[in-house]
Length: 76
Image 1 (cartoon, rainbow, N blue to C red):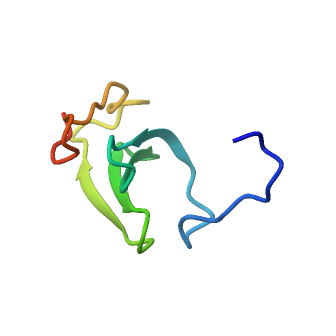
Image 2: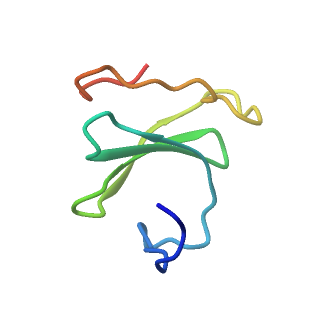
């Protein structure tokens, strides 16, 4: 992408900042981190967003090294 087209809103809760974005290898999912030690998952086709996990200890960035499996079925 060259940045010439207008952006597209992916989620309705625009007041929430996503810190790290992890696109799945198949391009269907976007895992993301958010304030409060949360890890979320967005299904790009439907726009459905869900909380996967909240870290026990609210560090600055508890999910800084998330990786997808090659078949897009698992996060580690």
